[in-house]
Image (cartoon, rainbow, N blue to C red; front, side):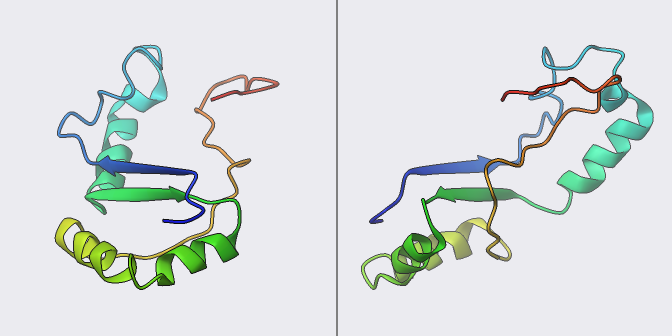
Length: 108
């Protein structure tokens, strides 16, 4: 895909806590009964996601509508996912862990 800067495929891991271990302390909210229930409810909504990284929305549209890419990509997405939608994400926005007190600066 012309203009593609990065491509990440995330599929749901049967061990939902795998990504959290060694990142959060064992007694953090994320491992509580409420945190576990919230995470499992959220994860039940999806099987995976693709992250396509472009410098601009115009680059994304050009790549997705390229006839060499459009149909093979749609076929792959149809095989992997029940539904597909597109959202634009500003990579300056990140998920910050639920920490108290909140850090002055967070780097991922």
